[in-house]
Length: 115
Length: 111
Image (tube, rainbow over all chains, first blue to last red):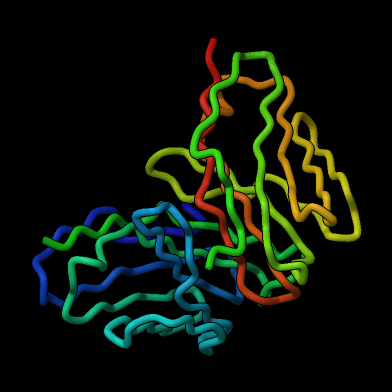
């Protein structure tokens, strides 16, 4: 009964490929997020969706496209993968759209390696 | 431009002693601060938070202190236990805006 789950856990692929990472939460939360943990270990937000609506879209290459088929799912599709895309990607969810007391719950992460 | 920084990548503490993890921020508009704990191969989990209207928040063995004038917060764990060994992330937010995370400090508790 994992609260926030991601698949796959590990993803190894060649440059130029297109890949997707799936995320699901069973907490009934309204907001979901994608974070990237880079080589310097900072966790940086990429996108957030509230009830399937895009709320935050940071400066991310348009090769990255989030898709939210319903409020329990937020998938991340990446086109034309590059070496610099190698990182750990975390999905998270929160009950509301942010603010005090609206803590985020994180998935276990997907380690993407681009060769 | 990193608005939240944890300048100690690692910290080693003896079991039973106090662990003090530090975090500095540059944005004076941040009004809510959080600490997350992360074990290997898992996602970060929420640990404790503090609003900018307070200077201290305590939850069991964990206490967070906020010094707004210095733009500094710290997490105290006392007494430290082996299960506390993890990476600790500091995070900050302005209103309902995005969470900004530091790069984490790896805490190791030695028996």
